[in-house]
Image 1 (tube, rainbow, N blue to C red):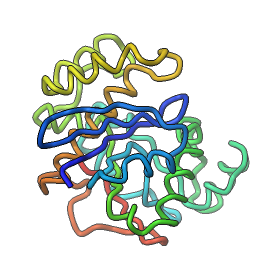
Image 2 (cartoon, helix red, strand yellow):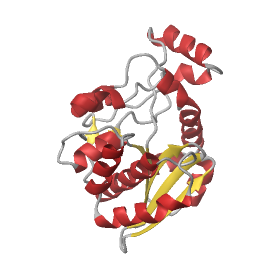
Image 3 (cartoon, rainbow, N blue to C red):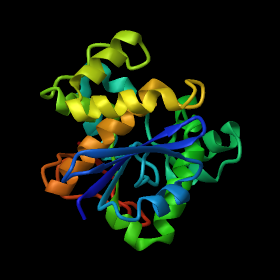
Image 4 (cartoon, rainbow, N blue to C red):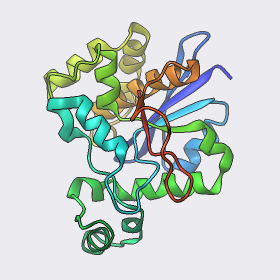
Length: 234
């Protein structure tokens, strides 16, 4: 299949940018659940999603440490992924306590803010072995840095300068896809950086499809207790 998809979480669910590699045609859509997204992207050979996939039992994930080293000044953009036990917490306090019991570290508020989406992806992949073959983890800041010749972005993505910097770095067809997609949703539902992150994720998905993506850390792949890979591709 010559179709790939890049995915980022947004306030109202998941934003997915799908690219036909042979024609460079884009489709950008929002899905309320990750399961709906998987069903919609059934023809995509690669689905690159900005969410932690393989989860450690206790120690920090090697992939997060590798990505932070690579990003240097932008290292703080890689939030520490929760350990698997933390997914069972029903509040920040309980999830953080479970994390502390397993790893000696409490959860950050940023990590807890996406823990519901981590659960969604984790449940979907554990239930579907075919999805495990197609869904890979990416981190937009790592992807943009690779696209930028291994140089991290100069400005934060939430700043107007950062948004302009990232948009200008994307290839022309991606910029056109952004221009077509941005007016379709309210900013409070889908932020500009959500769209940009989905587009750089699909750029990485195309590299995974062609076998040219880089792995953080490099091979061999480390897998978690559920057999899911702990790696970020870019």
